[in-house]
Length: 173
Image (cartoon, rainbow, N blue to C red; front, side):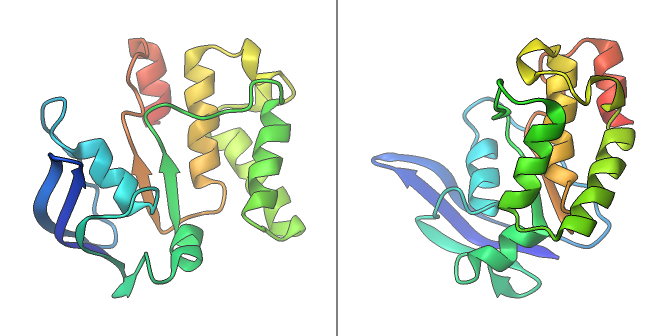
């Protein structure tokens, strides 16, 4: 379970998030709805530890993600709105590198690479340079990165933005 308690984030005089509280329990799927500028992305960035809140708490199973950031990072997968990929790497190289950064054991990494290649529909572009991929395949690569370590919590920020209807169906599958 991830629990948000009175979360606030200020950027100078601008209050982007104003004292929100909610909990997401194991097995639940939750979506943030709101207009541009409502604080959805800022909230997600705080939930994964990219931003520090001005006030409030974020807990993963009653443990602060800010007190124990490495533990929280190992349990959370994140696909940001602007998918950061290394264009010069192949899909396989990028995902292997991300697994090494997460200090995944080699045997586990090999299993998970096979899993994400197949389940994210990446086998046909596995050795292809990321710079040559369509937007849909780039999103699939980002999703594969987010689930590579088999996280308990998955946070996706606009995972289908800018994709055509067929690509949206592929990402949802």
